[in-house]
Structures are given as structure tokens and as C-alpha cells.
Length: 371
Image (cartoon, rainbow, N blue to C red; front, side, top):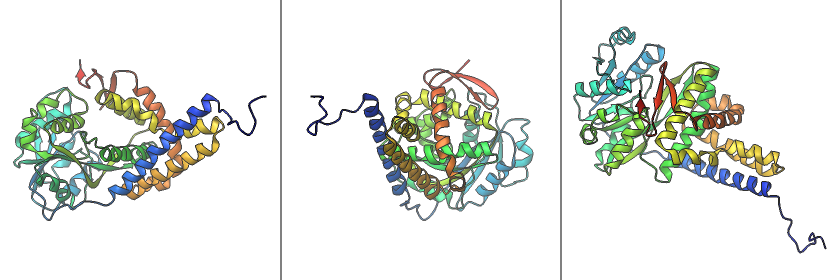
């Protein structure tokens, strides 16, 4: 008897079983992400009137994206002041001088994270009890202020953040943007869905000045590279909620493939030192990788099914949630971008240095910038 009769089940090789299991786990994550994306489109009531706020925008360098970002902020509805922080001699001073409505703040405080030094100066110059911080190139819609400040009317909410839509100047930056739209954005939605709400993104950070004081001010973040994550983490530690708004803002990406690689590795290593356990779990979400493994191991039906689910979720997130045109134009590159992301993850798993704004910085295990 060879054990292959009709009463016996064929035993699959261990490698095939593992491949099937990985495909199943990755598929479950993609379905969860798909549900999170569909759920996020329900939207939220942004309130009738925006709360008065000081918008703090640290600026370094001048390009077309900065001018467009400033114009979008000056078209906002509601009561606000727009403060832009610049260093002495920065070319952005001349560009900002074209907008008399902008309060230009000369920033002199030096910190390991130069952006946080600018925020310290900007906060001291601000007038309103509500602060909204976003990156220099962020563009917004006229109702942005209303929608990101409304949740702060609830005393249990301590911070509001939002997703962002990338637009690339080059093919390489558009390729990078695919990852933001189809991988990072849905992962942020999944995290919120399962109750992980301590992180925040530089696309928007809206919070009370009083709560900032309670965590030690921006000074407490001065040594950390991921200042946005640290802000959300510390405000959450006060017992307050960090809310993901239904607002989607727009950011501008640029550079060649080498720039994209450096940027992505910096981002990966920053995530690793900020949330090591979560970073180690990321491979279980690598649907395209496990689809390829499944196909190569002979489980091509499972592999192709997983790839199909992955593409469906990617388009849902990139187009129907973020409205990124590049996701439709370059959808055929999504699997390649996924595999690029696997290489980035592997590179981010090791090393303690990153390149940021032309400088090489070394990080300790807590994500602080060290000499």
C-alpha cells in the first residue's frame, strides 16, 4: 500500500503549505484594507464654522510647489493666520514677500531636527489657541480649516491628522507616489480601523496649544526625526484621541530614482525606530511578494487570486479614496512598486543613518538624532 488510495488525502509539501498560508494572510489584510477604504469614504460632518487657528508652516527653499501651497492656504474659509518660518538667507523669503497676508517669522532656534526649531519660533509668534501644522508644499481646499478643526470641539480629541495625495514632477517621483497612494494610505486606514490611533502625519497636525504645553512643547520633540509621530504619540499618552480626518491634501514629490530610494529608506528606518514591532510585521502585508512566491511554488491560482485582490484594493485606495490620477495612469506598475517596497523594507531593517535635506543623520534606537 502506498497510502495514495481514495481514503487518503494527499499531503502537500511543507513549502507549498507555507506559501498558501502566506497568501491567505496577505489576502485577508488586503480585504481588511479594502473594507477600511470603503468605510473611510462615508465622510464626517466637518461642522458649520471653522475654529480660529494659527497655521504654522516651516519653510526651507523656494519652488513652484511652495507658491501654490501658499495660494491655497490664503483662499481658506474662516478666521486664521498663516505663519511661515524661514531661516536667514533662505531664498523662500523673496517668494513669501509676494504674499503680504503671510506672517513671515525669522527662525533662529537651532535643534537637531531643524524643522522643530522653526516650529518653536512659530508657536511663540502664533496668536490662536488652536494650531495647525503642515509641510511647506501641502496644498489644501477652501474648506480644509473647517474640516480639520471641527473634531477638536470634542474635548476627548487631542489631535487631527489626514491623508495626502502625492503628485510627482518626474517619472521616478510618480513611481514613488504609487506606494504612498496604494500602500501607505490604506495601511493608515487599517491602523485606525483596528484601534491604532497614536500616530500623526506631517500632512496635517491640528491640536490645541494647551495640549502641546502639557507634553513639554515642541522642545520635547527637538531631538526626534519623526516629530509628527512623536507629537501624536505624546498627545495620545495624555488620554486624548488622535483622529484621522476625511480631508485629503496634496503634496508634491520630485527627484530621480536615487532620490526616491534615499527618501524611502529614510522613511523605512524612521518607522523601524519609532514602531519596531509594527515594522517587523509589515512583510505579512506584502501581497505581491507572496503572490509571486505562490505562483513560483506551483500554487498559481492562489497567487493570481491574491494579486487580483491586491490590485482591486490598490485602485480603491489610490483612486476612489485619494483621487490620484497616477494610480489609474500607472496601475500596471503597482506590482513592480510593491516589489521595490520589499527591497526598501529590507534596507530599512538595518542601519542607523539616514539622508535628510542633504545631511546624513544618525539615529539611536528611540529615533533621536545623535551626533
